[in-house]
Image (cartoon, rainbow, N blue to C red; front, top):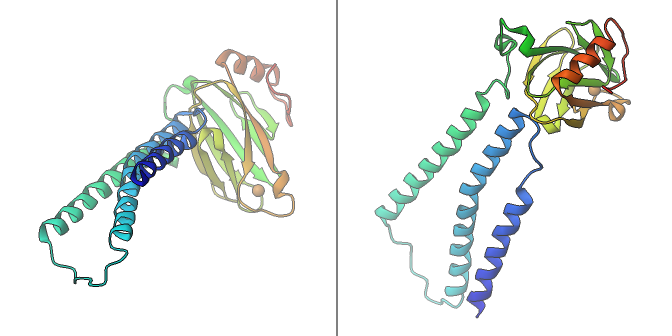
Length: 245
Ligand SMILES: [Cu+2]
């Protein structure tokens, strides 16, 4: 009966972990990569954790009144098995992570450039300047400058060129799984490809002074048509805070 109950608890725990670990729907290609990796690693980690717990509990229960413990005997087969199994698991975890880290949507570098070089219409470039304590986004193609407002077209590569005017800041858009530091006098880059329209928050995630907690903003993912209309409506303007209609 006790064994039955333990099995029930284990099954329930398994389901609870799976349900609780299911993240909100990803809003960008990069975030989807992170979420998928998380699930893959979870499927490996969960059975392992359960196996270890079962062995532990079994050993504790079964040998709780053992007055005559025997020294551990060598068992080459068992040792080779667990070493090989561990190696396979580590290679799997390393390979999965490497594939994700190699994606330009996770680690865009200066040379990654707009992902679709030569076809600028398909990549939106936004120059993001962080300062104490807000964000300035500049859209070079229409000379639009916004304050704490990032408007991006859905389904398009958005190439961010990030820098800072004063101290170190960091741009964080959780819905995109995007986080990139902003340094004074140096440019960092990030690439995002939104996969759904919607409104999200962006934050500074590097403590940068007394106004740090106010250093947030909004991200509007809109259809390419609405994006175009919004951009044209504000051509040449600065300090735009009005989101697309
Ligand atoms: Cu900051």
